[in-house]
Length: 337
Image (cartoon, rainbow, N blue to C red; front, side, top):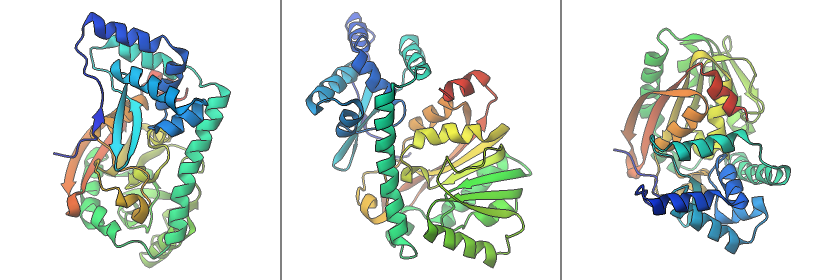
């Protein structure tokens, strides 16, 4: 089994009292804005207060009401706490309908701009870490993600999801480029998008050393803005999501770049409580639980495929998952809102 994400929320007993709490929570415009923002990502109280220009005490009150109604959950990561939208039960059509309606509404201009600024601040922290670290990557990184173990498993799941490979693949954040050779042997053309010069230099060197110049093309830029708009047979994100400021949005961006029947391959840490990884390895998130990834995939129009888990050293666990583009036009239209 993999680690729980440790989200705390009120139990749903299905009573009139629960329904009253739900309707009361959903009847306030400020709380609906909170739910809109949390549809984009997980945020702390201070971040939500900044985005919605609200006192911290007022934001804490709104979050407490939403939590009692089963609409938000609190996640503790080290000394920090983050909030996200609670996942509706399969039979809870009222909860599902509320979130679907909110996702079709655009966030107002002011909060949208401040949300983008908070995301930018997160991205800048991650960028500064990798620009600073260069080749002197902390040795603890190998304790977190042992590529020799998860790389082989990722290849097996990709082969089962896409027997025979395909025409084009996109790898987001190839780092030192260790997975590029595996992709190059399975796809006619591989595009790799990397955002920092130290990592670009390592990928370039590996491409040269392994003779991959003919079908591997390295691009400099940030995901997803600098990714080619064309559609790929596969999009690959190996140990990338926990460095990204908007992991949920990455599923939408990947879905938009997959052909019909294309596959998203994700290798990622299960949720853990080792907060030292933020300082030593540049992690923005302490991994994710499977329910989060499945929810983000569903909202992006992707169907979960195979999942495998690996226990690594120092208590870390890795999940390797595939998701397939399901050609659901309605889901894709929702993801564009």
